[in-house]
Length: 342
Image 1 (spheres, rainbow, N blue to C red):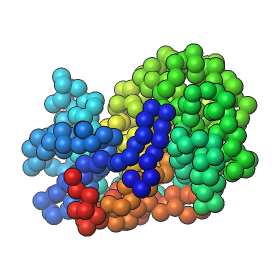
Image 2: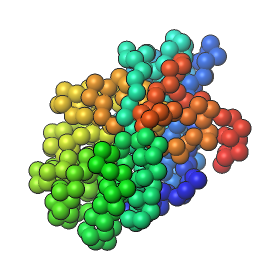
Image 3: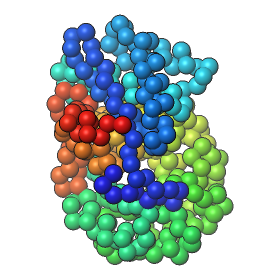
Image 4: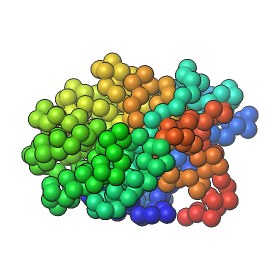
């Protein structure tokens, strides 16, 4: 990565990706991206996808049906973790191929129409001075929202960062913060209660992602909206979170939620419960999906994977512009892929 991305729980210095191609008998190729978070999982995930491929080869191009068949095949092993990531990568590639076969964008294939989406930029766990500089740069580019990593050793430092960002961007820019699961529920309630006066748009994952009861207790005790979802595995996790009252908003990740198929099923539940939906990473695909999501909220923009894409997501005046050409918006820069190949 051009610059390390710091969080309260660690530093991300590289972006390990498995690139998935699904080639149809008509010669159309669909693309999917799997982000393994750590290089340790890179080869095992690629091998899983290669091992699953024979279960898909020769079947009609029907992503929904194939997703259900693969989920049933791996039910005993489980469809979380590396298996879930592999299945989602295949699902993304199949939907991309399906859209290309029909000559339309993924948004149009799903019955929607491309539209600008308000986007926010990310700020690492970089202290109040650097956080303010990065926030100001996002604002100068027209972004109407920024999200900072917090979870410093003291509440005072969290507040310093938020106040420095507010001073840098003004009152009209939304500020979100992300604790990256680093607090206990009791610690989270104490800290967020103190943050309630800062006018945050949301506080993200203050405690462990799957502690639905803990997040529900936090959400009941504080005024600032709680945001969760990037670490939920499949629509069932989202259902559990909804029933617990764990999150005021939701932000599924297209990979962990189960690809395009999982996203569609998850956001249908979110809509039924009146929950606004944002995304985690995968900006190109997520822009297509948010354009078809009735309660779309914010698009999380990241340029981490731009070097390997021929047409990265375009941003204009702080709004993301979903690609309108056939497919999900992903195409490889083959020279760059060759250069970065592991």
